[in-house]
Length: 253
Ligand SMILES: Nc1ncnc2c1ncn2[C@@H]1O[C@H](COP(=O)(O)OP(=O)(O)OP(=O)(O)O)[C@@H](O)[C@H]1O
Image (cartoon, rainbow, N blue to C red; front, side, top):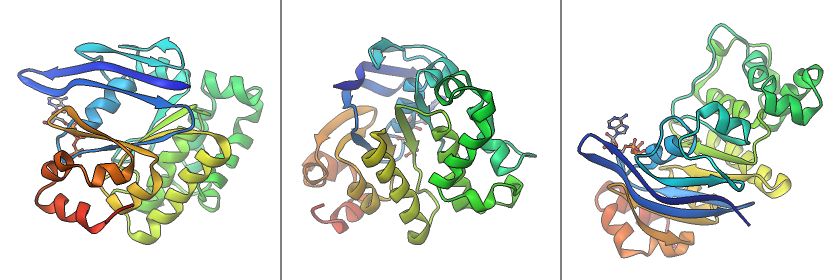
């Protein structure tokens, strides 16, 4: 069953077409990767789906509902959560308090049985991302890797059906990537969470995703399994240079 259907999505910024006629579907329970060089339109695609801004043209259907142009909070309340490439913690609060905020959302309280369970749910989410030992720390004390975990926790607190991760491994070392990748894999396998992920760390990305769509200059240039994608001539061409070498180095996933 398709949980997300994106049809012929266009976003124009003045004369620039940041996304151009982009169409794809996501099946429930799938991990779909979005690949493309810098400026390809990946984040712009997420922003339109998550309601940060409306598309210039096209349609987005989530869980059977037309969400095209709906506000970010309306989309989140339907169970579509997203993370940001640069973590956006609420300063002046502890880690637990940061996660509590989305736990008090209408969606979360409706699904966990009321506001009185919010704290328990927030603690459970922190365990899921292995941040429970930092619950009472001020967010200012967290390392970059811990802030990336917190970003994931805030999205999971909504009890989403689909989560969109914008470069969850950016700026992390191999040791820090592994537990985050493992949390995402576990949420997908054990809880059926559908995942859309943008990531430039190609080795880890290709191991995690079931299917990939590749963008370049705002257009979808390829779609297929990780193996199809790394062997696709259009993708290789888009990545010539530094990314081309990165693609070659991952071999056949
Ligand atoms: N709000 C905006 N106003 C004007 N141009 C924008 C805006 N947001 C994005 N763009 C432009 O749209 C294009 C696509 O940007 P986008 O951030 O979606 O790319 P990306 O694939 O996510 O890149 P990266 O991998 O570097 O994050 C770029 O040329 C960017 O400069």
